[in-house]
Length: 103
Image 1: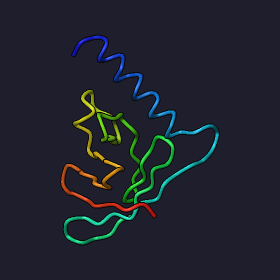
Image 2: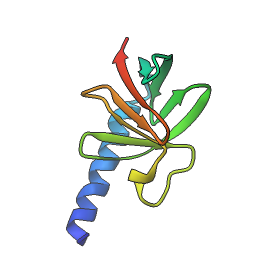
Image 3: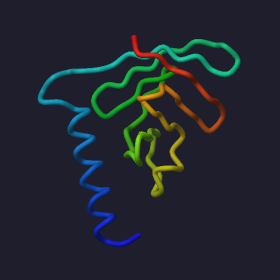
């Protein structure tokens, strides 16, 4: 990856993080998610964190429309345990696929 592309990606990630965190407001979005077996779970995006199935995951960054979350962000963000695409509500984990709808 060339330097200008890295700078642009870093700038976009910082802007996305700032947009998610807001200005001293505690904004969040709650999602109802159903896995491939039909089990329901609630997911909350709050500031730069995702709360899901009694765990809290950090925001690792975004590539295109996908945001990545993990307990400890890997060097390559696409290797994170969770990827989430808000526009479609699709969330993928290392073991499952979920369809989420904003509440």
